[in-house]
Length: 113
Length: 112
Image (cartoon, rainbow over all chains, first blue to last red; front, side, top):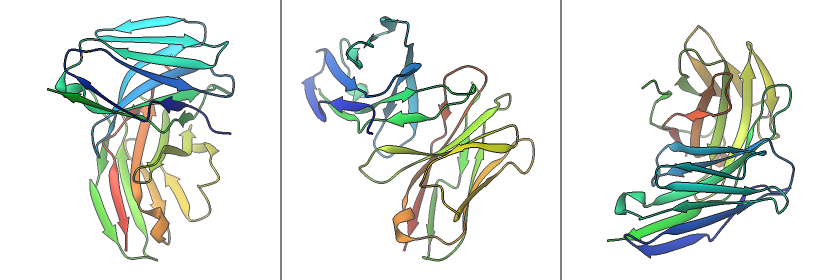
């Protein structure tokens, strides 16, 4: 089954506005992670939220997790042109102390100056 | 800050040729991973490696793929006989006992 479906697929906003991206998943998880990818580049880890957490902050990032709805959101406040990138959620289910990340298709965020 | 490195950054090869993608994980990390991302598609898990053996692999990771940790620092992915559909960005990742996986910058593989 597919895991970590993001919406919207693409989002274009003005610099200074807030950007909200959502992620839904299907199976139980131990944690959910958000990554950023600049065009054609590597994956940069942004934030991890565990299944027993509901909200987490890191700088201008706020992540929420609703395990009853199997969904998460990533909010970027006061967006900047440098935030332009693709954002992916990835879910992890830990088994025997190891796990793989199951990825969504990503949201392409464009911040217009 | 320590980081995962990968070489080469780009590799072009002919169909049927063998390629070896190299990764240097963060030095005190214990778990190692390979993922791939076909252009415009999702990132897909290939294989995880712990304690000098494969701990999990996906259905993509067939007999054409192998991984090795030949020394204390490198972690390699070998594709024995490349196919056109192996063209993708290949990411290596590592983690300590904590949950966060740290990714390298990727190797873009193009099979002609």
